[in-house]
Every structure is written in structure tokens, then in C-alpha cells.
Amino acid sequence: MNHMRSVMDTVMCLRGGNPFCYSDDNNNMYRIVSKEADGSSTAYYFSTPIYRRMDCKPVELRFALVNGNPVFHGSDARISYDGESLFLQSGIGRLQASFDGARALECVSGMLRNESVQIRPTLNGIAVAAACSREETFSFTLSTTDVYKKIRNTEAYIAFMHGRFEPFFVISGLYAHSLGGGLQSVKLSLERIDENTYHVSVRTSAKASSTVVFEINMYEGKFFQDTPVSSRLPDKNNCFGSVAFLGQTQQFGEQWLYTKTSRKKVFDIEQSTICSVKMHIPVFEADVQSLAVYLPQERFCSFGSTWAKKVPCGDLLGMAQKKDDYFTVDMTALLTNPKTGRLRKAEGIVLRLPQGGHAVLATGDCCMMPQIFEVNYRA
Image (cartoon, rainbow, N blue to C red):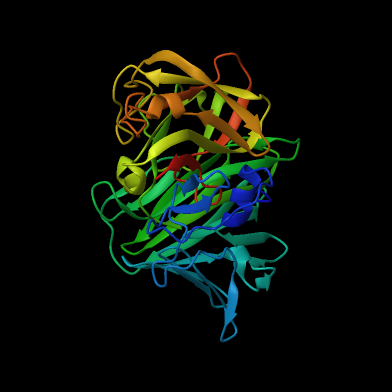
């Protein structure tokens, strides 16, 4: 989990060290804005809110001791540790996660850790890196205060649904570190013990793995609406999954990533003149330097898309280029009206690796490494 950075460190990485001049002209929970020397502004929209709802201050990605106990406040979550269990609470409800290996965790450098488990805050939850058992599995017990009758349960994520399209919280697998090097996918399973208690297992998709990494996030509406689709799981939708394994893998076969922005979350620049638009996609691992970016032939639904029902790819928009920890897509031509210079609607993009190789990417639901939408504009 060495990829994690603060919001400002992430922005400075994307700016290549260029000075950041903070603008307080902002009432959007998803973005931070810099005033540029040429009179323009650059907004960085994160895929999940970066400010705390309780006081509108930026989320600080670290646990702090409160009355002797580690506590973290995300955008809408309060997370605490009592020496045995973790408690996650949002405006919707509360849950308790009890890890066998999470007793006697120490709060060190803003994270919780011992010899077998490391827990770091995400923007609205936690990311857990845990040593595997001999069965290549890490298990824990989960308890909720309310009874949840609808649970979306796939191998990629487990979502306890609060509404038809809105979860209360989501457990999503990220990856496993293989002893031979490289990242492997993980599989989640859920067993109901009673109406409020569950047994969760995170297992690797390949043997000889040392550590599994996964997230537990209290749900927030996302800036990007996306889903990976997989040829070996042709009827599975992965709309709340946090990771995409593009290319060919043993577990997924060929995988594509469909993604589009939520126009409601860029209300503050609807009337602005757009200079450039970029999408930055975090990379966990890749053996390629570019991704193919296609236009879908028609509108797609992130909640209903599967490999069997996928919208075909249309024209090639261009290539996403890798720099440091991100693939960057130039979306200026796609999202800018050539007559007015303002943002225009589009049906999103499809990311693929048609020439071989693989890339492990964070999706729009990842709170550990959020995707970012960068817009340079003039008011």
C-alpha cells in the first residue's frame, strides 16, 4: 500500500512540481482548485469527496489519538479502534469489523499496524493489507446494527445496499502480492452467521501469495461511473469494484473498463471556457506504457453492463499514456464544444489493451487511490 498519498501530494505529483496557488472559490466536495499564472484556473475533481462533511475541511489520511484511541474522520465516516475491533460509522449506520490478526494494533505514523496487518485510512474508509494464511486466505467477522436484506455479492466486491443503486458500505478486493513478484487478483466471499453478523473471506486467485489488500469504504456518490467487464465472467457486473485487471488474466480472461463522468458534479464550470480536460487513472502495476481509448457505439449503463451485454467499441479516440503512477487520457476534444468552448455531454470511453500486456488500475470506486478529472478553464 505504498501508493497512498495525501490529496495535495497527489495534485503536486500531477502538476510535475509546478507551483500550486490555492483558490478558495470552491463549494464542490470533489475538487480542489489552483489559480494559474496565466489567469486561468485548474480544477482537480477526485472520484470521491475530499472534504469532511462535518466541518468542510480537507480529509487528513491518518489516524489520530482521541482519549487514547485511534480515530479517523473521512468525508462522511468516523472510524475508530478500541484495541480489538474497528468501528465504521456514517450518516446511514454503523458496522464493526473484527480481524483475528487485528488485536494489539499500534498507531504508528497515522496508520494501524502489527506484524501481520496494516490498516490505512482512505478518503472514506480503510485499506487493509493482511498476511495470508496457509490457505492463501484472510478472514474476518463483520457486524451491522441494521438488518440488510439486499446484498450485492460478487467475487470482486460485497455491497450492503441502502437503496436500489446506493450501498451503505462496500468491501472491495484490490490485489494480492505474489511471492514470485507481481500482483494477482483476490476473491471475496460472504457467509451469513445470523441476521446481523457475517464471515468475510479474502482469498487469492493464485497460490504462493504473501499479502492480500482490500478496502472497506462507507459509500459516497462517485464522480466516475464505471465498470470492468470480463470475458470469463460474461454475466457479472462489477460496478462497485475498486480495481480493473486490463488485458488477459487467468481469472478474468480479457477485461475492458467502461467509464464516464457524472455531469452533475461539474456544475461549477458548466458556463466556463474550457482549455483542456484530462483524466488520470491510478496504476497499481503495468507492463505497458499506453492503453487504447475507444468511444462506445452507444450509451452504456455502469450498473447493467456485462461482457455478454457490453456496448461495442466504436472509433479509437487515442491512447492513454503512462507517467509515474497514472495513465492519462486527453479528453479535451471529446468533452469540449468547438463552437462554445464549454463542456459538452459524451457517452464516456472504453479502455482496452488490444495488443497484449496487462495493467492493474484503480477504478472510480477506489478510495485508496482515486481517479482524477483535471480541467483547466477560464471563468
